[in-house]
View (spheres, helix red, strand yellow):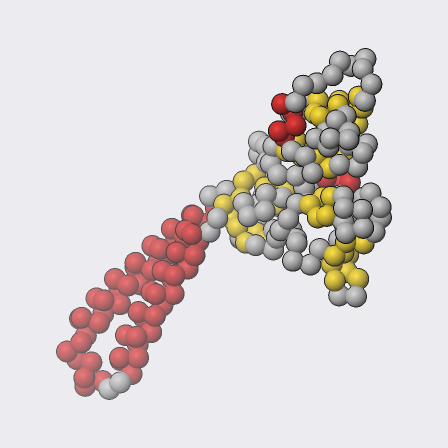
Length: 233
């Protein structure tokens, strides 16, 4: 599999042989995974053989054991795109690349790239495209939601923008208020608590536990990673 380094190789003139014009592989052309006998599988885009992707879902491409060619199973990394050479070599190059050279010694084909497939704009009202901070894949998100979002690709939770930091601040303020009240009530009634039995001590412990729970929730929201909205809102 080639990479962006192949762009540094000398390029041939347009009228020379071994020059091809092809389109990059768009997100809609990636093979969808499906279950077969309990195993996640994808179809090889070269020989159509089935490829087991168990334990490989974090990878961007997998290699076919039949033809030894690579097949993408996820969108290309940010700023990159996939290109399939006519010799079946899968290349990864910069999104801005217009010409690349196949690195295989028996090919060395110069590839003129057609314009990349354009992702259709979001037409649903109140929806936006979000780039997951964990896997860098893109998914749709409803802006009216205020809760953390779970990525449909990697299943990990993140915040969209700085919304969760605002929630974290609210929980932190509540935790401080509850803690202050708990301390005030505890020290203010400690001398009289002995005559009221153990129930008062249970109330003390409950108040401090509530403050601790609110504080841990605030830390959870503050530490949450942030996914970013793609393009202007």
